[in-house]
Amino acid sequence: MELTKENILTLLGEVKDPEIPVLSLVDLGVITGVEISEDDHVTVNMTPTFAGCPAMDYMKKDVERTLEKHGISKYTVNMTFDKPWDSNKLSEKGRQHLKEFGLAPPPKYDLILDLDILEHVKCPYCDSENTDLRTPFGPTLCRSMHYCNDCKQMFEQFKPL
Amino acid sequence: MNEQAIKDLLYKLADDQLILGHRNSEWTGFGPILEEDIAFSSMAQDKIGHSLAFYTLLQELGEAEPDTVAFTRNANQFHNSQLVELPNGEYDFSLIRHFLYDNAEIIRFEMLSQSRYEPIVKVATKLKGEVKYHVLHANTWIKNLGSSTEEAILRLQSALSEALPYALGMFEKSKYEQELIDAGVYAGEEAVKAEWLKRIQAVIEKTELKMPDLESITPKFGGRYGEHTEHLQPLLDEMAEVFKIDPTAEW
Image (cartoon, rainbow over the protein chains, first blue to last red):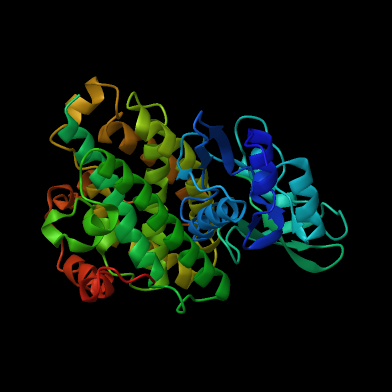
Protein backbone atom coordinates (compact mmCIF):
# COMPACT_ATOMS: atom_id res chain seq x y z
CA MET A 1 0.00 0.00 0.00
CA GLU A 2 1.25 3.44 -0.88
CA LEU A 3 1.38 5.78 2.09
CA THR A 4 -1.00 8.59 1.19
CA LYS A 5 -3.43 10.58 3.24
CA GLU A 6 -6.36 9.07 1.31
CA ASN A 7 -5.18 5.51 1.91
CA ILE A 8 -4.74 6.12 5.62
CA LEU A 9 -8.24 7.61 5.82
CA THR A 10 -9.60 4.53 4.06
CA LEU A 11 -7.91 2.31 6.67
CA LEU A 12 -9.32 4.43 9.47
CA GLY A 13 -12.78 3.97 7.95
CA GLU A 14 -12.56 0.45 9.44
CA VAL A 15 -12.32 1.81 12.98
CA LYS A 16 -15.76 2.11 14.54
CA ASP A 17 -17.06 3.94 17.57
CA PRO A 18 -17.13 1.16 20.22
CA GLU A 19 -20.47 2.39 21.57
CA ILE A 20 -22.07 2.94 18.13
CA PRO A 21 -20.55 0.16 16.01
CA VAL A 22 -22.16 1.37 12.76
CA LEU A 23 -20.27 4.64 12.85
CA SER A 24 -16.65 4.98 11.69
CA LEU A 25 -14.34 7.47 13.37
CA VAL A 26 -13.93 9.24 10.04
CA ASP A 27 -17.71 9.70 9.68
CA LEU A 28 -17.95 10.70 13.33
CA GLY A 29 -15.54 13.55 12.52
CA VAL A 30 -12.98 12.90 15.27
CA ILE A 31 -10.06 12.37 12.87
CA THR A 32 -8.92 15.96 12.38
CA GLY A 33 -5.81 15.41 10.31
CA VAL A 34 -3.43 12.89 8.76
CA GLU A 35 0.15 13.82 7.91
CA ILE A 36 2.84 11.72 6.30
CA SER A 37 6.43 12.89 6.64
CA GLU A 38 9.14 12.39 4.04
CA ASP A 39 10.53 9.42 5.97
CA ASP A 40 7.07 7.79 6.02
CA HIS A 41 6.14 8.60 9.59
CA VAL A 42 2.33 8.71 9.86
CA THR A 43 0.76 11.22 12.25
CA VAL A 44 -2.95 10.98 12.98
CA ASN A 45 -4.60 13.81 14.90
CA MET A 46 -7.80 13.12 16.79
CA THR A 47 -10.11 15.16 18.98
CA PRO A 48 -12.65 13.93 21.56
CA THR A 49 -16.40 14.22 21.03
CA PHE A 50 -17.05 14.82 24.72
CA ALA A 51 -14.02 15.59 26.90
CA GLY A 52 -15.04 13.00 29.51
CA CYS A 53 -15.94 10.26 27.04
CA PRO A 54 -14.30 7.03 28.27
CA ALA A 55 -14.41 5.56 24.75
CA MET A 56 -11.88 8.08 23.41
CA ASP A 57 -8.90 6.27 24.87
CA TYR A 58 -10.22 3.04 23.40
CA MET A 59 -10.66 4.70 19.99
CA LYS A 60 -7.10 6.01 20.06
CA LYS A 61 -5.76 2.52 20.79
CA ASP A 62 -7.96 1.13 18.02
CA VAL A 63 -6.44 3.59 15.56
CA GLU A 64 -2.95 2.46 16.64
CA ARG A 65 -3.90 -1.21 16.32
CA THR A 66 -5.35 -0.65 12.84
CA LEU A 67 -2.21 1.14 11.62
CA GLU A 68 -0.04 -1.71 12.94
CA LYS A 69 -2.27 -4.36 11.41
CA HIS A 70 -1.57 -2.79 8.03
CA GLY A 71 2.17 -2.86 8.54
CA ILE A 72 2.62 0.78 9.50
CA SER A 73 5.21 0.82 12.26
CA LYS A 74 6.20 4.47 12.39
CA TYR A 75 3.22 6.42 13.65
CA THR A 76 2.04 8.91 16.26
CA VAL A 77 -1.59 9.35 17.28
CA ASN A 78 -2.34 12.63 19.06
CA MET A 79 -5.49 13.54 20.96
CA THR A 80 -5.88 17.33 21.10
CA PHE A 81 -8.42 20.15 21.26
CA ASP A 82 -6.70 21.99 18.40
CA LYS A 83 -9.70 21.53 16.11
CA PRO A 84 -12.46 20.94 18.64
CA TRP A 85 -15.25 18.58 17.66
CA ASP A 86 -18.81 19.70 17.17
CA SER A 87 -21.76 17.68 15.93
CA ASN A 88 -21.83 19.47 12.56
CA LYS A 89 -18.66 17.46 11.81
CA LEU A 90 -20.67 14.23 11.51
CA SER A 91 -20.75 13.23 7.83
CA GLU A 92 -23.99 12.66 5.88
CA LYS A 93 -23.15 8.97 5.69
CA GLY A 94 -22.62 8.95 9.45
CA ARG A 95 -26.01 10.59 10.01
CA GLN A 96 -27.71 8.02 7.84
CA HIS A 97 -26.02 5.18 9.75
CA LEU A 98 -27.11 6.66 13.06
CA LYS A 99 -30.73 6.83 11.95
CA GLU A 100 -30.65 3.22 10.74
CA PHE A 101 -29.18 2.27 14.12
CA GLY A 102 -32.26 3.86 15.79
CA LEU A 103 -30.39 6.90 17.06
CA ALA A 104 -31.68 10.32 15.94
CA PRO A 105 -28.80 12.20 14.28
CA PRO A 106 -27.96 15.65 15.72
CA PRO A 107 -29.65 18.47 13.80
CA LYS A 108 -27.24 20.76 11.95
CA TYR A 109 -27.10 24.32 13.19
CA ASP A 110 -25.57 27.65 12.19
CA LEU A 111 -22.82 29.10 14.40
CA ILE A 112 -24.63 29.11 17.74
CA LEU A 113 -26.49 26.11 19.07
CA ASP A 114 -29.78 26.89 20.81
CA LEU A 115 -30.79 23.91 22.93
CA ASP A 116 -34.47 24.66 22.28
CA ILE A 117 -34.03 22.42 19.24
CA LEU A 118 -33.96 19.48 21.67
CA GLU A 119 -37.66 19.94 22.31
CA HIS A 120 -38.82 18.59 18.95
CA VAL A 121 -36.23 16.14 17.71
CA LYS A 122 -37.29 14.07 14.72
CA CYS A 123 -38.15 10.51 15.76
CA PRO A 124 -35.77 8.04 14.04
CA TYR A 125 -38.55 5.42 13.80
CA CYS A 126 -41.51 7.35 12.33
CA ASP A 127 -40.01 10.77 11.40
CA SER A 128 -42.57 12.61 13.55
CA GLU A 129 -41.51 15.88 15.16
CA ASN A 130 -44.22 15.59 17.80
CA THR A 131 -41.67 14.54 20.42
CA ASP A 132 -40.56 15.63 23.90
CA LEU A 133 -37.15 15.81 25.54
CA ARG A 134 -37.19 13.51 28.58
CA THR A 135 -33.66 14.09 29.81
CA PRO A 136 -30.49 15.57 28.31
CA PHE A 137 -28.46 12.71 29.82
CA GLY A 138 -28.72 9.20 28.39
CA PRO A 139 -26.81 5.91 28.49
CA THR A 140 -23.64 7.60 27.21
CA LEU A 141 -22.44 11.21 27.43
CA CYS A 142 -23.30 11.85 23.78
CA ARG A 143 -26.97 10.77 23.94
CA SER A 144 -30.15 12.42 25.18
CA MET A 145 -33.51 10.67 25.76
CA HIS A 146 -36.76 11.58 24.00
CA TYR A 147 -40.32 10.32 23.69
CA CYS A 148 -42.31 10.20 20.46
CA ASN A 149 -45.96 11.15 21.01
CA ASP A 150 -46.97 9.56 17.70
CA CYS A 151 -45.37 6.12 17.68
CA LYS A 152 -45.29 6.10 21.50
CA GLN A 153 -41.67 5.02 21.79
CA MET A 154 -38.70 6.25 23.75
CA PHE A 155 -35.74 7.00 21.52
CA GLU A 156 -32.25 8.40 21.88
CA GLN A 157 -30.59 11.23 20.06
CA PHE A 158 -26.91 11.82 19.40
CA LYS A 159 -26.70 15.21 21.11
CA PRO A 160 -25.98 18.34 19.11
CA LEU A 161 -22.85 20.04 20.47
CA MET B 1 2.60 37.17 31.12
CA ASN B 2 3.38 35.85 34.58
CA GLU B 3 3.12 32.06 34.31
CA GLN B 4 2.23 31.81 37.98
CA ALA B 5 -0.93 33.83 37.33
CA ILE B 6 -2.01 31.47 34.53
CA LYS B 7 -1.32 28.43 36.71
CA ASP B 8 -3.38 29.89 39.53
CA LEU B 9 -6.29 30.40 37.14
CA LEU B 10 -5.99 26.87 35.69
CA TYR B 11 -5.78 25.28 39.14
CA LYS B 12 -8.93 26.91 40.41
CA LEU B 13 -10.88 25.87 37.32
CA ALA B 14 -9.57 22.31 37.34
CA ASP B 15 -9.96 21.79 41.09
CA ASP B 16 -13.57 23.02 41.10
CA GLN B 17 -14.42 20.56 38.33
CA LEU B 18 -12.60 17.62 39.88
CA ILE B 19 -14.17 18.04 43.31
CA LEU B 20 -17.70 18.71 42.08
CA GLY B 21 -17.27 15.81 39.63
CA HIS B 22 -16.46 13.56 42.57
CA ARG B 23 -19.44 14.81 44.57
CA ASN B 24 -21.73 14.27 41.56
CA SER B 25 -20.46 10.72 41.26
CA GLU B 26 -21.65 10.04 44.81
CA TRP B 27 -25.20 10.16 43.42
CA THR B 28 -24.54 7.08 41.29
CA GLY B 29 -26.94 4.43 42.54
CA PHE B 30 -28.70 6.86 44.91
CA GLY B 31 -30.56 9.28 42.63
CA PRO B 32 -34.17 10.03 43.59
CA ILE B 33 -35.29 8.78 40.15
CA LEU B 34 -33.37 6.86 37.52
CA GLU B 35 -33.04 9.86 35.17
CA GLU B 36 -31.46 11.97 37.91
CA ASP B 37 -29.12 9.17 38.90
CA ILE B 38 -27.95 9.07 35.27
CA ALA B 39 -27.83 12.87 34.99
CA PHE B 40 -25.57 13.37 38.03
CA SER B 41 -23.41 10.42 36.98
CA SER B 42 -23.06 11.84 33.47
CA MET B 43 -22.20 15.29 34.78
CA ALA B 44 -19.61 13.64 37.05
CA GLN B 45 -18.00 12.04 34.02
CA ASP B 46 -18.07 15.35 32.10
CA LYS B 47 -16.62 17.36 34.98
CA ILE B 48 -13.78 14.95 35.63
CA GLY B 49 -13.04 15.00 31.88
CA HIS B 50 -13.04 18.80 32.01
CA SER B 51 -10.65 18.85 34.96
CA LEU B 52 -8.33 16.55 32.99
CA ALA B 53 -8.28 19.04 30.10
CA PHE B 54 -7.15 21.82 32.46
CA TYR B 55 -4.65 19.62 34.36
CA THR B 56 -3.19 18.75 30.94
CA LEU B 57 -2.68 22.47 30.22
CA LEU B 58 -0.93 22.72 33.60
CA GLN B 59 1.30 19.79 32.70
CA GLU B 60 2.29 21.63 29.53
CA LEU B 61 3.39 24.50 31.78
CA GLY B 62 5.67 22.16 33.74
CA GLU B 63 3.38 20.92 36.52
CA ALA B 64 3.24 17.22 37.42
CA GLU B 65 1.10 14.84 35.37
CA PRO B 66 -2.69 14.98 35.92
CA ASP B 67 -3.05 11.85 38.09
CA THR B 68 -0.27 12.98 40.39
CA VAL B 69 -1.78 16.43 40.71
CA ALA B 70 -5.26 15.04 41.33
CA PHE B 71 -4.37 12.28 43.77
CA THR B 72 -1.36 13.35 45.79
CA ARG B 73 -2.11 16.85 47.02
CA ASN B 74 -3.56 17.58 50.42
CA ALA B 75 -6.60 19.76 51.05
CA ASN B 76 -4.55 22.90 51.71
CA GLN B 77 -3.04 22.62 48.22
CA PHE B 78 -6.44 22.66 46.49
CA HIS B 79 -7.80 25.87 44.97
CA ASN B 80 -11.46 24.88 44.63
CA SER B 81 -14.21 26.98 46.15
CA GLN B 82 -15.71 25.61 49.36
CA LEU B 83 -19.09 25.35 47.59
CA VAL B 84 -18.06 22.26 45.60
CA GLU B 85 -16.60 20.32 48.52
CA LEU B 86 -19.71 20.46 50.73
CA PRO B 87 -21.39 17.07 51.16
CA ASN B 88 -24.26 16.34 48.78
CA GLY B 89 -26.88 16.56 51.50
CA GLU B 90 -30.32 15.77 50.17
CA TYR B 91 -31.25 16.13 46.50
CA ASP B 92 -32.53 19.70 47.05
CA PHE B 93 -29.09 20.87 48.18
CA SER B 94 -27.25 19.06 45.37
CA LEU B 95 -29.63 20.55 42.81
CA ILE B 96 -29.27 24.11 44.14
CA ARG B 97 -25.49 23.80 44.26
CA HIS B 98 -25.46 22.43 40.69
CA PHE B 99 -27.64 25.38 39.58
CA LEU B 100 -25.46 28.00 41.28
CA TYR B 101 -22.20 26.42 40.18
CA ASP B 102 -22.92 25.60 36.54
CA ASN B 103 -24.46 28.97 35.79
CA ALA B 104 -21.11 30.48 36.85
CA GLU B 105 -19.02 27.85 35.10
CA ILE B 106 -20.56 28.48 31.69
CA ILE B 107 -19.86 32.22 32.01
CA ARG B 108 -16.21 31.49 32.84
CA PHE B 109 -15.96 29.29 29.73
CA GLU B 110 -17.70 31.87 27.53
CA MET B 111 -15.27 34.53 28.72
CA LEU B 112 -12.22 32.27 28.47
CA SER B 113 -13.13 31.36 24.89
CA GLN B 114 -12.29 35.04 24.17
CA SER B 115 -9.04 34.95 26.15
CA ARG B 116 -5.72 36.18 24.80
CA TYR B 117 -4.08 33.03 26.17
CA GLU B 118 -4.47 30.69 23.19
CA PRO B 119 -4.25 27.24 24.90
CA ILE B 120 -7.16 28.06 27.20
CA VAL B 121 -9.30 29.33 24.29
CA LYS B 122 -9.40 25.92 22.62
CA VAL B 123 -10.36 24.08 25.79
CA ALA B 124 -12.96 26.65 26.86
CA THR B 125 -14.52 26.77 23.38
CA LYS B 126 -14.94 23.03 23.43
CA LEU B 127 -16.17 22.67 27.00
CA LYS B 128 -18.73 25.47 26.99
CA GLY B 129 -20.83 23.40 24.58
CA GLU B 130 -20.86 20.51 27.04
CA VAL B 131 -21.65 22.67 30.06
CA LYS B 132 -24.69 24.04 28.21
CA TYR B 133 -26.33 20.70 28.93
CA HIS B 134 -25.52 20.98 32.63
CA VAL B 135 -27.08 24.45 32.74
CA LEU B 136 -30.14 23.27 30.81
CA HIS B 137 -30.55 20.42 33.28
CA ALA B 138 -30.20 22.63 36.36
CA ASN B 139 -32.46 25.41 35.08
CA THR B 140 -35.19 22.98 33.97
CA TRP B 141 -35.38 21.30 37.38
CA ILE B 142 -35.24 24.57 39.33
CA LYS B 143 -38.09 25.95 37.21
CA ASN B 144 -40.16 22.78 37.58
CA LEU B 145 -39.62 22.08 41.27
CA GLY B 146 -39.45 25.74 42.26
CA SER B 147 -43.07 26.17 41.26
CA SER B 148 -44.43 22.77 42.27
CA THR B 149 -45.43 21.59 45.76
CA GLU B 150 -45.11 23.51 49.00
CA GLU B 151 -42.54 21.03 50.30
CA ALA B 152 -40.38 21.30 47.17
CA ILE B 153 -40.43 25.10 47.33
CA LEU B 154 -39.59 25.16 51.05
CA ARG B 155 -36.74 22.70 50.63
CA LEU B 156 -35.25 24.57 47.68
CA GLN B 157 -35.60 27.90 49.47
CA SER B 158 -33.77 26.60 52.50
CA ALA B 159 -31.06 24.96 50.34
CA LEU B 160 -30.64 28.28 48.51
CA SER B 161 -30.08 30.17 51.77
CA GLU B 162 -27.61 27.55 52.90
CA ALA B 163 -25.64 27.46 49.63
CA LEU B 164 -25.49 31.16 48.75
CA PRO B 165 -22.67 32.23 51.11
CA TYR B 166 -20.55 29.44 49.62
CA ALA B 167 -21.67 30.27 46.07
CA LEU B 168 -20.52 33.87 46.57
CA GLY B 169 -17.22 32.38 47.73
CA MET B 170 -16.68 31.10 44.16
CA PHE B 171 -15.91 34.69 43.17
CA GLU B 172 -13.01 35.15 45.59
CA LYS B 173 -10.35 37.09 43.72
CA SER B 174 -6.97 35.68 42.88
CA LYS B 175 -3.90 37.59 43.98
CA TYR B 176 -3.17 37.90 40.26
CA GLU B 177 -6.65 39.21 39.43
CA GLN B 178 -5.69 42.60 37.97
CA GLU B 179 -2.75 41.14 36.09
CA LEU B 180 -4.99 38.57 34.37
CA ILE B 181 -7.55 41.23 33.49
CA ASP B 182 -4.92 43.66 32.17
CA ALA B 183 -3.37 40.95 30.01
CA GLY B 184 -6.76 40.06 28.53
CA VAL B 185 -6.47 36.48 29.79
CA TYR B 186 -9.55 36.48 32.00
CA ALA B 187 -12.34 38.99 32.54
CA GLY B 188 -12.11 38.54 36.31
CA GLU B 189 -14.42 37.43 39.10
CA GLU B 190 -16.38 40.69 39.37
CA ALA B 191 -17.43 40.39 35.74
CA VAL B 192 -18.37 36.73 36.11
CA LYS B 193 -20.36 37.43 39.26
CA ALA B 194 -22.34 40.30 37.70
CA GLU B 195 -23.40 38.18 34.74
CA TRP B 196 -24.10 35.18 37.01
CA LEU B 197 -26.46 37.21 39.16
CA LYS B 198 -28.47 38.25 36.13
CA ARG B 199 -28.79 34.69 34.91
CA ILE B 200 -29.73 33.03 38.19
CA GLN B 201 -32.20 35.81 38.99
CA ALA B 202 -33.88 35.31 35.61
CA VAL B 203 -34.50 31.65 36.48
CA ILE B 204 -35.54 32.26 40.09
CA GLU B 205 -38.07 34.87 38.94
CA LYS B 206 -39.89 32.14 37.03
CA THR B 207 -40.46 30.20 40.27
CA GLU B 208 -42.02 30.71 43.70
CA LEU B 209 -38.52 31.01 45.19
CA LYS B 210 -37.28 34.29 46.65
CA MET B 211 -33.76 35.53 46.07
CA PRO B 212 -32.25 36.41 49.47
CA ASP B 213 -30.73 39.87 49.86
CA LEU B 214 -27.13 39.32 48.81
CA GLU B 215 -25.90 42.45 50.62
CA SER B 216 -26.68 40.79 53.95
CA ILE B 217 -24.68 37.65 53.14
CA THR B 218 -21.00 37.23 54.02
CA PRO B 219 -19.30 35.15 51.32
CA LYS B 220 -17.36 32.07 52.46
CA PHE B 221 -13.94 32.88 51.09
CA GLY B 222 -10.68 30.98 51.54
CA GLY B 223 -11.02 28.08 49.13
CA ARG B 224 -8.94 29.71 46.40
CA TYR B 225 -6.09 30.07 48.91
CA GLY B 226 -6.20 26.53 50.29
CA GLU B 227 -8.52 27.12 53.24
CA HIS B 228 -11.21 24.47 53.27
CA THR B 229 -14.00 23.01 55.35
CA GLU B 230 -13.51 19.75 57.22
CA HIS B 231 -15.26 17.97 54.33
CA LEU B 232 -12.51 18.22 51.71
CA GLN B 233 -9.78 16.03 53.19
CA PRO B 234 -12.02 12.94 53.66
CA LEU B 235 -13.20 13.36 50.05
CA LEU B 236 -9.58 13.47 48.83
CA ASP B 237 -8.67 10.42 50.92
CA GLU B 238 -11.51 8.45 49.39
CA MET B 239 -10.79 9.65 45.86
CA ALA B 240 -7.10 8.70 46.10
CA GLU B 241 -7.58 5.38 47.88
CA VAL B 242 -6.81 3.13 44.90
CA PHE B 243 -4.01 5.39 43.64
CA LYS B 244 -2.29 5.32 47.03
CA ILE B 245 -2.39 1.54 47.20
CA ASP B 246 -1.13 1.10 43.64
CA PRO B 247 -0.21 4.19 41.56
CA THR B 248 0.05 2.05 38.41
CA ALA B 249 -3.42 0.51 38.71
CA GLU B 250 -5.82 1.03 35.82
CA TRP B 251 -9.52 1.07 36.60
